[in-house]
Length: 253
Image (cartoon, rainbow, N blue to C red):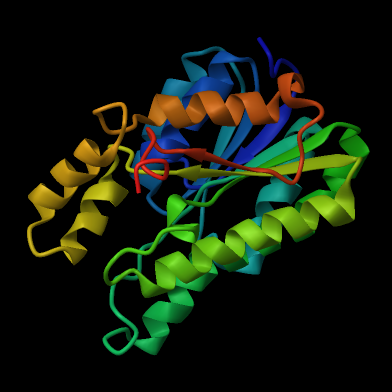
């Protein structure tokens, strides 16, 4: 029970990596504020979380808007009296090369992937300071380092997430630890949506799997284990870092 009596906000919690993190944190005793766009999926995740005998609340909303992020923090304090940490996990692809990409889609990608991290940190930091051991885990991507066809806005926004994570760690340590995780190909709906950018999507997923040194795609539980480590006291001397978790793809590039 590494997160017993601690309160976390998890965004993008209704599927994929975010759902995996929510379930793992619940197993470790955390009380949770969960966010996503789809209320039906949100209620389904909430039901699974509560089966683990922890208290939780799902709040539907667009994480790219500042008001949504403020509302999540306010609800955490209202319901639980404090906020100990957050996992910023929401992601949007916005596929297209620079010349193909609609400007509105570019902005939406940045709003979901980067603006949301800024807004959530902005409104969480005062409460995380009060917690004494506040932590933030930010989901970036190997796309911050490695480029993929027709992923202009995604790669750029995830690189921004990485830079913001490290800069925030400088400003708010030692009261708050802030780290990033950079997943490779994890078997989630987002991965299969990403593969649409390639001529043969099914082959693209297969090639991604083959490119790993572990000969398999990642699973949400793999990411959840790393997020748990960075959110718990096991990583008490770690901040301002970015952890690649990709089955060895970057080593094999």
